[in-house]
Figure 1 (cartoon, rainbow, N blue to C red):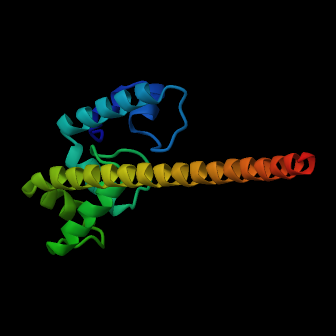
Figure 2 (spheres, one colour):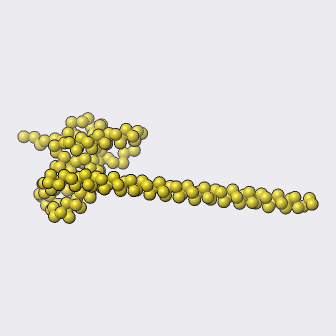
Figure 3 (cartoon, rainbow, N blue to C red):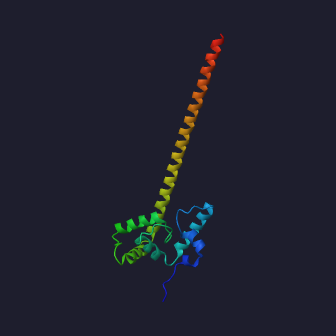
Amino acid sequence: MSEPRGWCAQFPSVWADQMWGLDDVDDENPSGRRALVAAGIRICDSCPLRFRCLADAIVTHERYGIRGGLRRMPRVRLASAARAAGVDLSGVRASQNLESWLRANPGMIGLVRDAESKDRAYRRHNQQRREARRERREAGRAQSVAESATQGTLDAGDGVSDAWV
């Protein structure tokens, strides 16, 4: 009997790479990529092998892509939560132990996903604040240079006009 395959295995590899592949792919169409990734996550959410896929990705420390509907950082958070709950993530039964825990605690997936979403929003907000501060500093420097140049011109002009008096 063959091993059951997840729903992601039914997609052409070009699509699968965009939907579940590397997280940091440079793309000419980022909004299209986001839509494909969101669709991939929704497909994972309803796949019958979701818990197995997610458990395997966590136990094998998969660093890239979406597995079981989660990116890498939410998987790391989920592993920490499982360890804190006493799940043994080492040894030959680690994947089965984690899969059983995930089936018993499916709400944990939503919690780590929400936490990661909040962290991303926080990082985005801080990045925007840093960029705004940098722009204000640069504008202030440009204004100082302009004022210095204007002041220097006025001083030179004053000296010239005094010579004619």
